[in-house]
Length: 320
Image 1: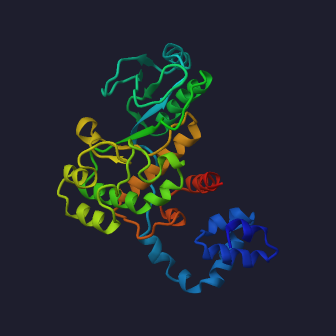
Image 2 (image 1 turned 90 degrees about the vertical axis):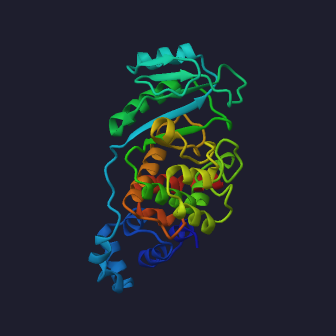
Image 3 (image 1 turned 45 degrees about the vertical axis):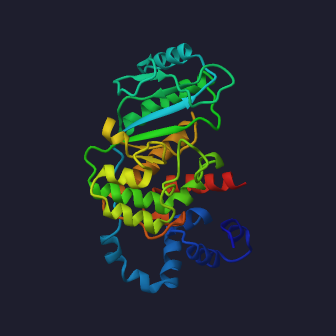
């Protein structure tokens, strides 16, 4: 049965809980889905899985411990249908420094609006709105202001537009890079389900699958494990090209790792959740974890409830 079928059935709440546990839902998720207290759910869980309760201390000792979001990051938002001058003026009016520049890859201390020839536009100028180096919650607040300016100016997006996220990678170890690539490859088909069809698999030239060159997880993992440098990982997975879902080549120009898969959007909520999703995956990889599972529900081992719920709903919406 699906989650919705379980929730709408005439069974007792205890029976519903047990079926939701079997689907891999956490106790907190079950409590939220059924609108009952966590203590009630915990009692049912303890009776259903008494063997698991005894090992709770050992499990918690080796579980992933999430760090707060204080990461340095950058954002590139592709759009069209808006005057660059008007957009610049609106961003500045809202209190964020922004400058119009020619096409370039230079990191600035201000937001910049540059041209982008990859965008298919039918109305107005296509452009890319690029952030300076942002950090943590204060960076997200500044991003929210820029998204509001884009909405105020009625900027448009279409299937050719993308959203690119950079994270500071200067202090990421080689092992973290390996773990991260393996985690993303492991979850790639699940992440695809969180995206529109134009951003899945190998359908988009500018965001190719990490299995494009190596067509099985096993071969990819073997090559990644054998790599002795970031350049070697980039070579075996992407032939040192940047148009992949993860772009390691940005490290050699900006000391960052770039995530290119997300579809174009000016919606702050979508961008924020994607940034926090990626942060948790990087953090999970930094702490030495590589998931052995690939289902969406197994992402609960590193995702915050907010992101898990957001993408659960998004998967349902995109599948409709």
